[in-house]
Amino acid sequence: MTGSEGLRSRLMRGAMWLGGARVATNILGFVSTLVLARLLVPADFGLVALATTLLGVLTAMTAISLSDALVQHEQPEKEHFDTSFTLNLARGVLVGAFFAAISVPTAAFFEDARLIELMLVLSLTAVLTGLENPKCALFMRDLIFWQQSVMLVSQKAVALVVSLTIAFLYQSYWALIIGVVLGQAVSVLLSYALLPYRPRFTLSKTRDLFSFSIWLTFCNFITTLNWNFDNLLVGKVLGKTSLGYYSMGNHLAVMPTREVTSPIIGTLFPAFSNLKQAPERLRAAYQRAQSIVTAIALPAGVGMALVADPFVRLAMGEKWLPAVIVIQCLASIFAIQTLASLAHPLAMALGNTKLLFTRDLIAFAYRVPLLVVGLYLGGLEGIVYMRVFTGRISIYFNASIVSRLIEINYWEQLKPNLRTFAGIISMTMAVYAIGVLLPEAVDNIGLAINLAALIGGGAVVHIIVVGFAWNFMGRPVGIEDEALALVQNLLRRTRARFMGPA
Image (cartoon, rainbow, N blue to C red; front, side, top):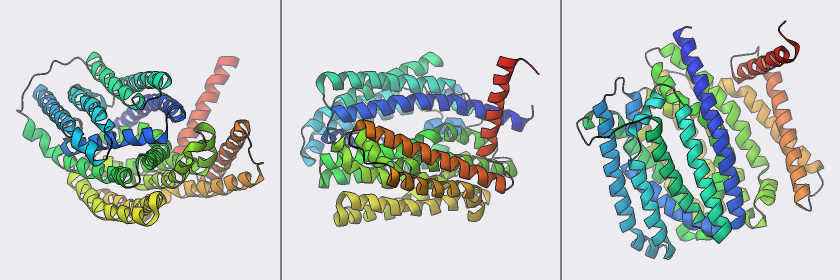
């Protein structure tokens, strides 16, 4: 097996492990979200969103991306891991203490005393994060992903059981918090069970790790503040009920795009790192990976937008209908943004994290004032429409980064996705046509039938059009090859099982 084939084989195995884990966590998270949406009210989600957003911003302000530095390092030593543990623990304790200390003034600012207890409990997650085993970075560095999969599924399973139990018994917003804390604790314990490590306090390799991670630290801070500022703005100006609609809509909108592509994207940072000394192979790997990500994410995200209304009515109830417009707009733009979403792992693999910081700083400079304008002109819908506008701008910046790093122009980045665009346009037209023909649903059974018809019809049309376009274009390299090879392999195994070898 050649080096290229070996790398591809390990990436495929890694994507399968992470893919299986993501499928499991998707199901668990999806079930949890829908059940909790039935048991709790939008204001509960808004209250928790305020607390978690504040912690996310504070965490990002101090994040030092040491795990990524260990992945990118060619030969990390024991002292590198000890330094990472020391820095992460110190940061976790300080963040937790500070978050607890600001709970009272924060509750006064948002005029809700319940935030005090929520923030005190959430501060524990910052400390738990600092206790995680730094050697787990070796799993990603060596393209070994089954351990990460076990940790992901276990954490989500614990959070699900705990959250649903509390929700059923007490119908309280605490269901959204306690499950997260206990799930994080399980993840920490598993990190040491899967890869034994005895930490030692030292700062001897701080300079070495910071040379890579410092720009990622700035980048994480700006990105988190940029993408969470709207939650704080909505919560303060429109109230916690509107924030509940907004945060739930945002969560459901990003889920299809994020979850179907995470298994692939999760393998690309170490994969691109392995190819950074071979520019031609890196370009080819990037184009192939980007076309696969878009081919999966675009129909998933746009499909979610097309069926948002019947989905919300059936799964969550009429009380969540204001979230429909959020899902429709954001699911579409999240999907379209995947056209250049791999700029981040590419820049990290090439060690050009300063470029990512510059991109995010510019995005922050134009996004925040535009969101403020959108909110005051159009309320909840105004801020959603403005996010669509700023999301389109971000595609240009990411494509520019890719062009600068590996010298692929905009057309070369767009061309492999043309058949996916054809499928999306056809799918959209088909779903609208089916929706016109379907009878109006008068109960949940009718909603379920209509939803199944929309999803099934749209999926069939998309697959047929993409397959025809792929064949018409001369069968270029892409996800169709992988799908065809998988089907042929399954047919061969089935034939051998039931009919014996030829």
